Image (cartoon, rainbow, N blue to C red; front, top):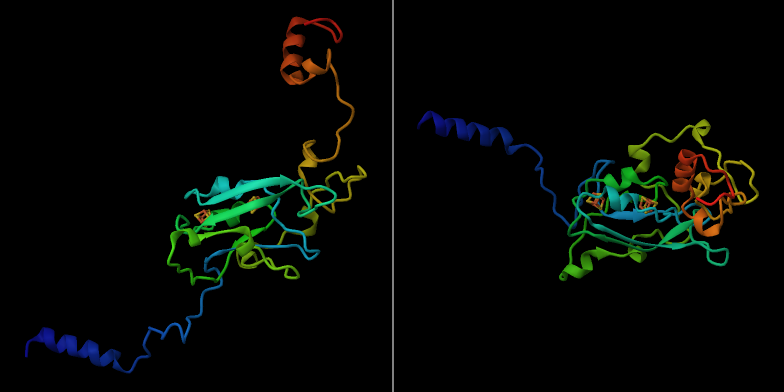
Length: 219
Ligand code: SF4
Ligand code: SF4
Protein backbone atom coordinates (compact mmCIF):
# COMPACT_ATOMS: atom_id res chain seq x y z
CA UNK A 1 0.00 0.00 0.00
CA UNK A 2 1.47 3.27 -1.02
CA UNK A 3 1.98 6.10 1.43
CA UNK A 4 -0.66 8.23 -0.34
CA UNK A 5 -3.38 5.64 0.28
CA UNK A 6 -2.44 5.42 3.98
CA UNK A 7 -2.56 9.22 4.19
CA UNK A 8 -5.98 9.30 2.53
CA UNK A 9 -7.36 6.59 4.81
CA UNK A 10 -6.04 8.49 7.86
CA UNK A 11 -7.89 11.62 6.77
CA UNK A 12 -11.08 9.61 6.28
CA UNK A 13 -10.79 7.96 9.70
CA UNK A 14 -10.01 11.31 11.34
CA UNK A 15 -13.27 12.82 10.03
CA UNK A 16 -15.53 9.80 10.51
CA UNK A 17 -16.62 10.69 14.04
CA UNK A 18 -17.21 14.37 13.29
CA UNK A 19 -20.67 15.92 13.06
CA UNK A 20 -21.58 16.56 9.39
CA UNK A 21 -21.55 20.18 8.27
CA UNK A 22 -24.53 19.66 5.97
CA UNK A 23 -28.12 20.07 7.20
CA UNK A 24 -31.29 18.43 5.92
CA UNK A 25 -32.92 21.52 4.45
CA UNK A 26 -35.84 22.33 4.48
CA UNK A 27 -36.59 20.24 7.59
CA UNK A 28 -33.53 21.72 9.26
CA UNK A 29 -32.28 25.25 8.81
CA UNK A 30 -28.85 26.62 9.50
CA UNK A 31 -28.54 29.36 12.08
CA UNK A 32 -27.55 32.54 10.25
CA UNK A 33 -25.05 35.11 11.47
CA UNK A 34 -26.76 38.29 12.77
CA UNK A 35 -25.44 40.37 9.86
CA UNK A 36 -26.62 37.97 7.16
CA UNK A 37 -28.12 39.93 4.26
CA UNK A 38 -31.22 38.39 2.72
CA UNK A 39 -34.15 40.08 1.09
CA UNK A 40 -35.17 43.62 1.86
CA UNK A 41 -37.77 44.81 4.36
CA UNK A 42 -39.25 48.30 4.49
CA UNK A 43 -39.93 49.49 8.03
CA UNK A 44 -42.51 51.60 9.82
CA UNK A 45 -42.37 53.92 12.79
CA UNK A 46 -44.29 53.00 15.92
CA UNK A 47 -47.11 55.36 14.94
CA UNK A 48 -47.59 53.36 11.71
CA UNK A 49 -46.04 55.91 9.34
CA UNK A 50 -43.62 54.52 6.80
CA UNK A 51 -39.97 55.30 7.40
CA UNK A 52 -39.25 55.70 3.69
CA UNK A 53 -39.43 59.31 2.57
CA UNK A 54 -38.86 58.59 -1.12
CA UNK A 55 -35.46 60.28 -1.23
CA UNK A 56 -33.92 57.89 -3.81
CA UNK A 57 -30.61 57.65 -1.93
CA UNK A 58 -30.81 53.86 -1.83
CA UNK A 59 -31.48 53.72 -5.57
CA UNK A 60 -28.55 56.05 -6.18
CA UNK A 61 -26.22 53.93 -4.03
CA UNK A 62 -27.24 50.64 -5.62
CA UNK A 63 -24.42 49.35 -7.84
CA UNK A 64 -26.77 46.91 -9.61
CA UNK A 65 -29.52 49.41 -10.47
CA UNK A 66 -31.94 47.07 -8.73
CA UNK A 67 -34.20 49.61 -6.99
CA UNK A 68 -37.03 51.48 -8.71
CA UNK A 69 -38.91 54.19 -6.80
CA UNK A 70 -41.73 56.57 -7.62
CA UNK A 71 -42.17 59.21 -4.94
CA UNK A 72 -45.38 61.09 -4.17
CA UNK A 73 -46.06 64.17 -2.03
CA UNK A 74 -47.63 63.64 1.37
CA UNK A 75 -50.77 65.63 1.97
CA UNK A 76 -52.65 66.35 5.17
CA UNK A 77 -55.45 64.03 3.97
CA UNK A 78 -53.03 61.28 3.01
CA UNK A 79 -49.94 61.29 5.19
CA UNK A 80 -47.92 58.14 4.62
CA UNK A 81 -44.49 59.14 5.94
CA UNK A 82 -43.33 61.92 8.26
CA UNK A 83 -41.34 63.58 5.46
CA UNK A 84 -42.27 65.67 2.50
CA UNK A 85 -42.72 62.64 0.25
CA UNK A 86 -43.23 58.91 0.47
CA UNK A 87 -42.51 56.03 -1.88
CA UNK A 88 -45.65 55.33 -3.85
CA UNK A 89 -43.83 52.65 -5.80
CA UNK A 90 -40.85 50.79 -4.36
CA UNK A 91 -39.58 47.80 -6.31
CA UNK A 92 -36.45 45.75 -5.74
CA UNK A 93 -35.34 43.50 -8.56
CA UNK A 94 -33.88 40.54 -6.69
CA UNK A 95 -32.46 39.06 -9.89
CA UNK A 96 -30.19 42.08 -10.21
CA UNK A 97 -29.51 42.53 -6.49
CA UNK A 98 -26.12 41.37 -5.23
CA UNK A 99 -27.15 41.76 -1.57
CA UNK A 100 -24.32 44.18 -0.88
CA UNK A 101 -26.31 46.21 1.64
CA UNK A 102 -25.35 49.61 0.18
CA UNK A 103 -29.03 50.59 0.08
CA UNK A 104 -29.34 49.93 3.80
CA UNK A 105 -26.20 51.93 4.54
CA UNK A 106 -27.36 54.86 2.37
CA UNK A 107 -30.83 55.17 3.88
CA UNK A 108 -31.06 58.20 6.19
CA UNK A 109 -34.18 56.99 8.00
CA UNK A 110 -33.42 53.30 8.56
CA UNK A 111 -36.30 52.47 6.24
CA UNK A 112 -34.72 49.61 4.34
CA UNK A 113 -32.79 46.66 5.73
CA UNK A 114 -31.68 43.27 4.42
CA UNK A 115 -33.05 40.51 6.60
CA UNK A 116 -32.71 36.77 7.17
CA UNK A 117 -35.11 35.86 4.40
CA UNK A 118 -33.26 33.80 1.82
CA UNK A 119 -35.91 31.47 0.38
CA UNK A 120 -36.25 33.42 -2.82
CA UNK A 121 -37.18 31.00 -5.57
CA UNK A 122 -39.68 31.49 -8.36
CA UNK A 123 -40.77 29.83 -11.60
CA UNK A 124 -41.10 33.22 -13.31
CA UNK A 125 -38.46 35.97 -13.40
CA UNK A 126 -41.06 38.74 -13.02
CA UNK A 127 -41.98 37.32 -9.61
CA UNK A 128 -38.50 38.20 -8.43
CA UNK A 129 -39.27 41.90 -8.67
CA UNK A 130 -40.55 42.49 -5.15
CA UNK A 131 -43.02 45.34 -4.75
CA UNK A 132 -43.60 47.68 -1.85
CA UNK A 133 -46.64 45.65 -0.77
CA UNK A 134 -44.40 42.61 -0.29
CA UNK A 135 -41.48 44.50 1.26
CA UNK A 136 -43.30 46.74 3.75
CA UNK A 137 -43.85 45.63 7.33
CA UNK A 138 -47.53 44.93 7.97
CA UNK A 139 -49.54 47.57 9.83
CA UNK A 140 -49.02 47.26 13.56
CA UNK A 141 -45.43 46.05 13.15
CA UNK A 142 -42.53 48.39 13.73
CA UNK A 143 -38.95 47.13 13.80
CA UNK A 144 -35.55 48.45 12.83
CA UNK A 145 -34.42 45.08 11.47
CA UNK A 146 -30.72 44.30 11.19
CA UNK A 147 -29.82 47.98 11.62
CA UNK A 148 -29.34 47.14 15.29
CA UNK A 149 -26.49 44.77 14.32
CA UNK A 150 -24.86 47.13 11.85
CA UNK A 151 -25.13 50.59 13.36
CA UNK A 152 -24.74 51.98 16.87
CA UNK A 153 -27.84 53.95 17.84
CA UNK A 154 -27.26 57.70 17.48
CA UNK A 155 -26.78 59.53 20.79
CA UNK A 156 -29.72 61.79 21.69
CA UNK A 157 -27.54 64.90 21.48
CA UNK A 158 -26.89 64.11 17.79
CA UNK A 159 -30.50 64.98 16.88
CA UNK A 160 -30.59 68.02 14.63
CA UNK A 161 -33.26 70.58 15.43
CA UNK A 162 -35.32 71.44 12.38
CA UNK A 163 -38.26 73.79 11.82
CA UNK A 164 -41.76 72.40 12.17
CA UNK A 165 -45.10 73.67 10.93
CA UNK A 166 -45.24 76.10 13.82
CA UNK A 167 -41.74 77.33 12.89
CA UNK A 168 -40.50 76.15 16.26
CA UNK A 169 -37.24 74.24 16.45
CA UNK A 170 -38.48 71.34 18.55
CA UNK A 171 -36.41 68.61 16.88
CA UNK A 172 -39.29 66.14 16.81
CA UNK A 173 -39.21 65.55 13.05
CA UNK A 174 -36.78 66.02 10.22
CA UNK A 175 -37.53 66.94 6.65
CA UNK A 176 -36.15 68.83 3.69
CA UNK A 177 -37.93 71.84 5.16
CA UNK A 178 -34.79 72.30 7.22
CA UNK A 179 -33.08 73.64 4.12
CA UNK A 180 -36.05 75.61 2.86
CA UNK A 181 -37.26 72.97 0.41
CA UNK A 182 -40.03 71.42 2.45
CA UNK A 183 -43.75 71.81 2.69
CA UNK A 184 -43.40 74.80 5.00
CA UNK A 185 -43.57 78.11 3.19
CA UNK A 186 -40.31 79.97 3.53
CA UNK A 187 -40.30 83.66 4.43
CA UNK A 188 -41.71 86.15 1.93
CA UNK A 189 -39.90 85.88 -1.41
CA UNK A 190 -37.21 88.42 -2.06
CA UNK A 191 -38.11 89.94 -5.42
CA UNK A 192 -35.25 91.64 -7.14
CA UNK A 193 -37.17 93.09 -10.06
CA UNK A 194 -40.33 91.14 -10.69
CA UNK A 195 -41.67 87.62 -10.22
CA UNK A 196 -40.45 86.26 -13.57
CA UNK A 197 -36.93 87.39 -12.94
CA UNK A 198 -37.06 86.20 -9.38
CA UNK A 199 -37.00 82.63 -10.65
CA UNK A 200 -33.39 83.16 -11.60
CA UNK A 201 -32.53 85.34 -8.67
CA UNK A 202 -29.39 83.49 -7.60
CA UNK A 203 -27.92 83.92 -11.04
CA UNK A 204 -29.24 87.46 -11.43
CA UNK A 205 -27.90 88.51 -8.03
CA UNK A 206 -24.34 87.76 -9.08
CA UNK A 207 -24.73 89.46 -12.45
CA UNK A 208 -26.41 92.52 -10.98
CA UNK A 209 -23.79 92.93 -8.31
CA UNK A 210 -21.08 92.68 -10.96
CA UNK A 211 -22.85 95.43 -12.94
CA UNK A 212 -23.43 97.58 -9.85
CA UNK A 213 -27.23 97.62 -10.47
CA UNK A 214 -29.72 98.34 -7.69
CA UNK A 215 -33.07 96.61 -6.98
CA UNK A 216 -35.87 98.04 -9.10
CA UNK A 217 -33.41 99.16 -11.77
CA UNK A 218 -33.76 97.25 -15.03
CA UNK A 219 -31.04 94.67 -15.61
S1 SF4 B 1 -28.39 45.12 -1.60
FE1 SF4 B 1 -26.99 46.19 -3.00
S2 SF4 B 1 -27.53 45.44 -5.04
FE2 SF4 B 1 -29.23 44.89 -3.67
S3 SF4 B 1 -30.69 46.57 -3.89
FE3 SF4 B 1 -29.38 47.06 -2.12
S4 SF4 B 1 -27.71 48.32 -2.98
FE4 SF4 B 1 -28.74 47.29 -4.70
S1 SF4 C 1 -35.55 53.46 1.54
FE1 SF4 C 1 -34.40 55.08 2.57
S2 SF4 C 1 -32.88 55.77 1.04
FE2 SF4 C 1 -34.46 54.58 -0.07
S3 SF4 C 1 -35.92 56.15 -0.79
FE3 SF4 C 1 -36.69 55.35 1.19
S4 SF4 C 1 -35.85 56.80 2.72
FE4 SF4 C 1 -34.67 57.11 0.84
